Length: 133
Image (cartoon, rainbow, N blue to C red; front, top):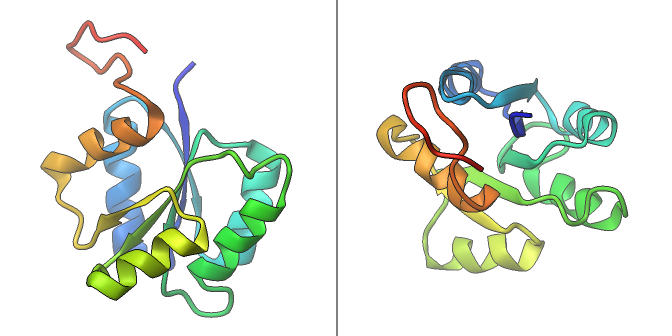
């Protein structure tokens, strides 16, 4: 079964790009446009990985990851910040908040899947390859 990746991203263009890349490489992409919807989706779908924008209106990424870490059913789910804020102080704040890492915006499509695979523990079988999970 293909890993399920929840993308919580309020920017439609970014969300569509992540969705396209994930599905093109055999992942199941779950999408939410804001923090509260993302939490609901995570609690119902139990994704293998959560990609979470930091700056969203309403419930921002820091508030969402705090809820994820308090939820016994989600607290072990790898959660990755997807953000343009990756200066030295931001890195420490992201780690201290409970994120497992971050992916820098703008997304670099040619590097994105390798980044995802690191957080999931290795590659899945992609179209045209023989890699196994």
